[in-house]
Amino acid sequence: MSEERKVQEIQISFAPEKQGGVYANNMVVAHSKEEFILDFMLVTPPSGVVNARIIMSPGHVKRVIAALAQNLRHYEEQFGKIEEASEPKNPFGFQA
Image (cartoon, rainbow, N blue to C red; front, side, top):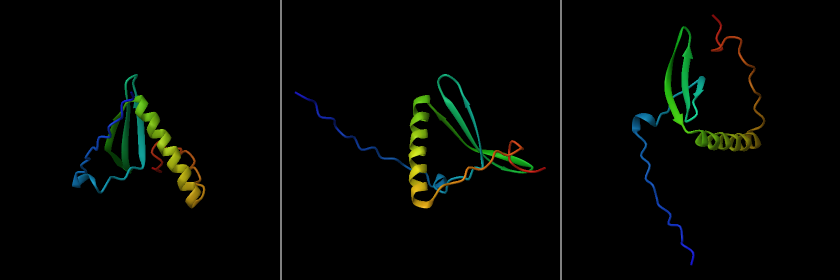
């Protein structure tokens, strides 16, 4: 006799102050054996600010990378190939 899987609906709330999102033009990634830390920054010379920090397990990072790759393929199928920007000489990409 097989057991049926019950689908549980999860209600997700989205705080109004977060709904506008934040813009990031730079990211720093750090990791340990247990987690990845992604710091998203808005860098506008002469300074910058970390406006979001995301901490994930290594397994979840793999799923996120796969989801981003799939969405990038779909985007390029719909809108055309995205040219990869060359790496900036300055670590934050701005001229002094």
